[in-house]
Picture 1 (cartoon, rainbow, N blue to C red):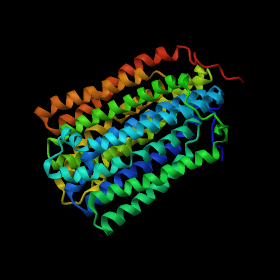
Picture 2 (picture 1 turned 90 degrees about the horizontal axis):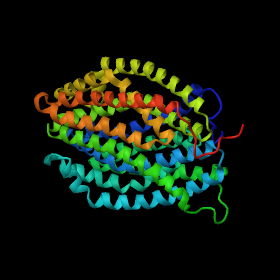
Picture 3 (picture 1 turned 90 degrees about the vertical axis):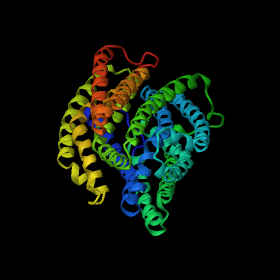
Length: 452
């Protein structure tokens, strides 16, 4: 099995789909990994326990998004150097990124543990579930170093065109998480803290496996004495891409966190419904999210190789694929909204199920809009136009938060639901407006065109 894939040659759709499939299956397991906690505590503990896990989810995502964004941005730099065939600079970029992001992880873990309580107060966690939520999130924050290690290895492999190996380790950790969830929560009666411990233990396994694989298999990154270093010149680019991508991811999750805060004001039933519905739709639009991530690697490698013609070809097939996929997905979610909610909740929780069904039937018909938004994120991230990715995120999430706050007053939770597709639409209009100009521009100005 090859550890790398050159995406500057071959049919664009075939390359992107081949890269997307392991990403999709891996993230499918990642989402399963995330929802197992909710299913187990919702079925075997209580509705309050489910609400505690759900209420902490957006805060957990906000913090982890900082680390994932750094790794994702660094991965774009790796892809560009690999696409250009510049292995010496690729090696220096990897060592610089690991030293930079590793230090950031230590600081972020300490700050998250220290300020967990005030952060939960800030997003208005109801008093009746505050201690449950705090106990869960403290354990999750303690596992942040494992989140960094796994994503550092995974984004390095993906930047080199290998999306399969991270999948294998995710499958392993997901299976372990399920077993430990049942053991700790059902067997030992440890409640939400048991669910958190199961998650951290599973993350530890996947991170160690991923790093060990990179050390053994990535022979092009074998370092001679003195080569593993902090390169100040490359650090500027690493920091720019990594920090800006992290800012984009953080803004995205900050917006979701703000919406969660508005949802939290409507009580435990709405929190539980929102928790379940968001997890369902995370599965639903996962294929186009991963397609956008694969597209980012494709764009970055071809920018590094100076192949703007291939980026144009890839963009056309990306648009058509998203339209087709989202039509099928949206239809399925609208039709099966109630049975999907029933996977997470007992039949007697009728009010919670009805609220979640309403959410899904408002938002699901517009999944093509978020599909295009993921495409734009991948496109601009791959080109290195990180400010544009941030702008689209600000438009999408800023409008969502503002409209959710305004519309929830006269229309209740339904006003929050409608704010979501409106935010997607406005961001897409801006993204498409600039995309045409970007496709006509030059690529790879700061990188030599790849020979051959």
